[in-house]
Amino acid sequence: MIARRTGGIAARIAAAALVVAGLAIAILAVGVVVIGGRSFADLMTRHGESAASSQAMFADTVVWVVLATTVIAIVAAMVLAGMLAARLARPLQEIGAAARQIADGDYGARIPRRGPDEIVSLSDSFNQMAASLEEQERMRREFIANAAHELRTPLTNLQGYLEALRDGVIEPDRATFESLWDEAERLVRLSHSLDTLAAGDKGAIVELDLVAAIRAAVELARPAATAAGLELVTELPPTLDARGDPDQLAQVIGNLLQNAIRYSSRGGHISIRAERRPADILVSVANTGEEIPAADLPHIFERFYRVEKSRDRAHGGAGIGLAIVRQLVEAAGGSVGAESRDGMTRFWFSLPA
Image (cartoon, rainbow, N blue to C red; front, side, top):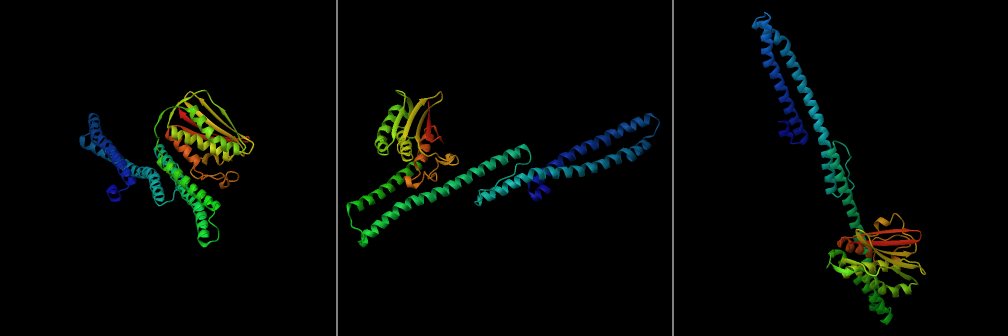
């Protein structure tokens, strides 16, 4: 009746515990009163007592004891059942309340780790999910804000130039059109980068020579490196068979080289290495220059993420290149990483062997 009236798990657990305890007490009481009573009467009869006096003695002693202990057992069972039900129900109620908070947009909700092992495991899983949702929400907000900023800057420049041309403030000369073209190109590059992030497909996976792909990307990047006063150094085996999409792989290597050129100190060098390991193939691009703070390293592959101080918008770029690298590599079954110390920054990616 309690379970039907409240409908809560605590009441259901308490009712189930009481039913079990009631059955156990009833069986015990029946065994003592019925079977024990007969045995007691037979024993007393053999020792000269009448059946009536034996029954009276049994009722005055054993029956009252059984009744008293039964009442005590029922009360104790009710108390213990309520305590057990509350102990099990409280964490579930907390999980329900936290879930409603997250549904309302409060991703900071967490559940304390207490209760049985199963409840603690459920709490850990819930907290992990909540932390992941909170991180995804943070990235979503940053993505929207940064995308708006990246679009706003060239659009503002275009609007300013066009207004000046319309009002006759500046002459429509070649330099003005080149500036307008540069801003339009910036918008096109940003659009292509966003398309690449949105696509997220694996592409056409084929057998290829990774060394040839790296050398082709290095030759394409060499003019920009030379203009920046940088030396390109390669440490590559003669050949290195791998599986991947040639176009996407070229984009990954090109993005890492562009990133290294952009953030290298003039007069420094960039080294590109590739090697086969037992389980995979490792490619790394290292450059000299200012180090990336340790606090920023876990976030540099996020969309639009930029390291403050030396690595900011003054160097150009939209902060999407490394996010594209991670997405394309992980789509091919590989992984990415970075390290920065002793005046050297190294980005690497691996592909399945």
